[in-house]
Image (tube, rainbow, N blue to C red; front, side, top):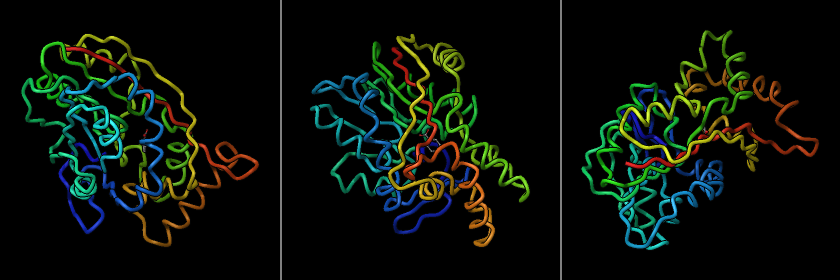
Length: 269
Ligand code: BEZ
């Protein structure tokens, strides 16, 4: 979730990230982004949370998955940088704190750090070096870091369609969205340079059904790019992006599937 930059603006149910303009609206996310938590069963299984363990959920968002992890009897702390998402997480009676993921304040107090679908919002290698240093510092000796994020090739068709659609508007969609989708070789290097021992790391293609369709996905997960356009241009850019994607991501029955690729890893301190 909004794990890295300062929040530029906040309204009742949405907050905006300063570095990529991405806005998190808790109500829209609950409708269009719920699949993010429901498809996390493999990384949750890899974490194998135990009752009584202290676990940090980095980029906890609205806490849907944090709540699930807490049901194991583990003691969860959620961290995010979006005040509106944190408010939604507090409604679930979770203990959550607002921090920038690149400046975690913890020292050797967690048995595990967990993260799902959040790390790709952190920009560039230097951002990730800061995050990894903070995660390493947060863990007790022998503690584990188990995470899943977008990996190399993630949402390639969607990114290409956006890049082509927005070029005539003089918007570089890749640069503006500032997502980080590393290969397993690169992320292994970053983890090892920080001092982690990598137990496993793999890139996993995961075609992802979009129950509410492509337009809802683009408005929820790529609004940081689309918000640079006027209302009229935005409507036309959405229509063009969807037309480009239809032949490859929409089936004969009208169902949309996004071309997700996950990077999943388990590293120990
Ligand atoms: C992801 O979970 O991989 C993702 C979601 C939205 C935008 C970019 C990446």
